Length: 117
Image (cartoon, rainbow, N blue to C red; front, side, top):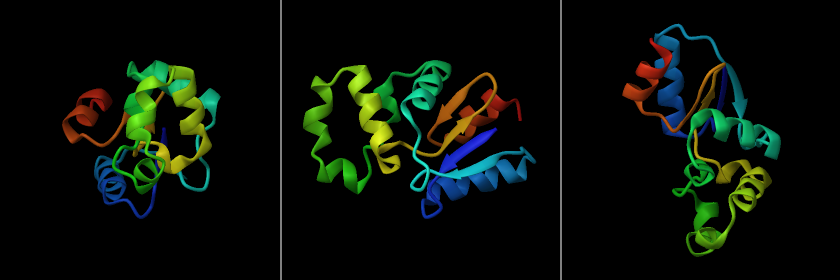
């Protein structure tokens, strides 16, 4: 599994601790240093079953600085994916990418259910 997160994010640290406690193996990727590209995002969006907008980090400083709340509603899905690929800090985290699913944001009950852990 691939775990994309930001090491300074408390939710990401909580998710990693949970994965470790369940002995679930994963490869960590720092999202700020290696932001996802368009191809990866499209693949993860498809496997998650979520719309591209659910991958946006609406809590981040960059989201507010760029005034994305007003811009995103008029953007196409492809434009949203391009935006997300431009900076890892715009992407909601953590993201856990498995063989059959992609989980966005840490919800312990959802992760437990999806990972059958």
